[in-house]
Length: 547
Image (cartoon, rainbow, N blue to C red):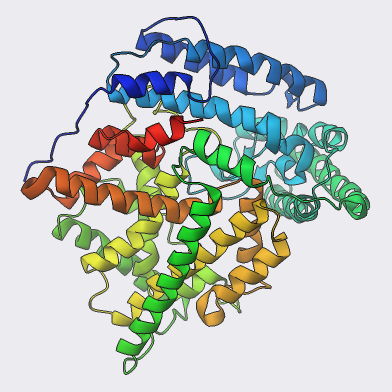
């Protein structure tokens, strides 16, 4: 059956509202889309910090200067007359505005360069499953996973040049980190310690291959360790809250994340999702009570067999049930993320799920479809072709990956293994519990430690261990990046709403594959904007345009 068309209706009233949303008044300007693209390119250059000898400058003076100049960009954007633009181009303008609002939020509220020591952690050994690494980080991160070892002489020089920026950046951080946010400070020590561990592993990997690189590594690690010691000495003086507060959280939801809910709305939604997950789990366990529980993977051989088999089964299901248009890059994208068997005990949360039924978490691997699609099928819009700043994409990327788990269960993926259906509800409960931690931390109604204890206690089966790395790492990320912890389920709910709306609009011609083609074609942008573009309905946009 043919895919149904995307509606491109124009809403002049919405356009006028959007022209003033989050920006500043300006004289009528250009009405050409090409001028928006030009402004976007200039904005992206401006958004990056100035470099001093290759080191990003986050000093107080540099940040004051950037904040002053930001107003000029917002004024220029607000002056663009988008009357008569198709919805897709209005969506692009909304994305540029959201990014500018993200920088405004950073300067006015968030100030990661002054509050968050983990902002200065810049060395990462593994690839993020997101279009950009989660959370705020200083410009110029060192993504070690992009290097192939042994290094060529040219790549060794490139890596050495990156490592040389670490000591001066951390020296600068001592002067920049002037604010009082205890949880961010304490967890920052943990992140800096991890950077030292990563550098030590890298040093062992390149030992004996390049003296100059080894020297750069040694200096980078010494600077990291010295920075950790400095943070530890300052820790006792840090007593203040780390959350942004409810009012600022609401502004961030509306003007940066483009989410049509408030903090209180999201608290209600997450409590409902947690209760729903726990109740559904109880019902599944009752129904399956006479069936054996899945036996976890127990060896490297079994791991390879079951995980590769899971990829084969999952892709065949998507293809044979006409759920998704299958591309050649999807199979290798999933197989590349299978990983290796670990017999480490006790297991972390997601390993507990993954080792019981590898098919379940292959659904969450939609992330790798997204990244492969972006590489192989670049979006035609020059604004959507590049990765959005400030994790603005998360309701789409995290929302779809999380929602896809339950959607595929309902589509029949786990019918032959009823006990695996229980895993879906365990996953959902964990996402709701940690989202409530996000909300309560930013309202300064929970400390990070209290959020950890809450999430661990509310997650079934004791798999989210309070002494594990997963729960601490997640809550630290959500404290650093407001609304990230809620995006998994908020995005999921928005996608379910959109699916229902499109099914009603299209009627008998609706197909799930057609819907997913539409969704994927829109790009990795906030779900509220995808809904506007696919349905022509602007009610959520009007909510966010209101003062």
